[in-house]
Length: 197
Image (cartoon, rainbow, N blue to C red; front, side):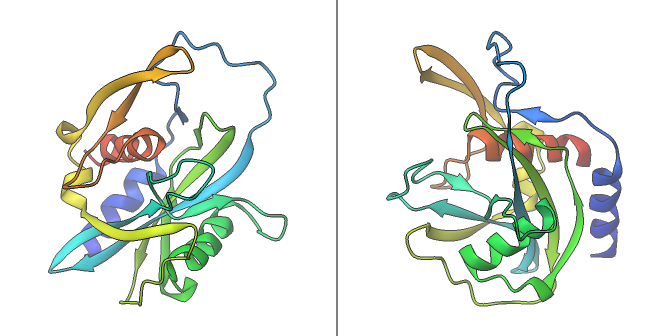
């Protein structure tokens, strides 16, 4: 474990470019002076079956935005949050029941711009002990884990496309079993995989 902690800390400590939902779509013209809302998401790393895993959520199908999609626990920064890291920790506690005192923050990636107008900071952390996962009703349908070895292998990422608002949009995917991990979540994980390798 110390080696992995060190590798992750070192990878996150390096400067790097921000990412965007538009990275694979350079023809999209974004409005100048657009105001992005700050948000934080938590990438909780846990020990399961003698292996390291990443916890992810499947969003409720009843949600207005991104229903049924795979996501990190997290959300927008509230006025009561000190920063985006505090927002990520608060949201993870609310969405999946992860107590903050079990979380050791290892670092962050540069912010990621989403098509929905957020500047999302991915916060990577180790969870120091087991806890009872409690999905927040109405927001989270399921909490599951993916081996780190899967999301840290760049060869597992695929570029796919679909029509969106009248144009073809390209995006990263990193499918795992029945879970179709794509869009912003896959893009942020791909950026992490690049740093780790």
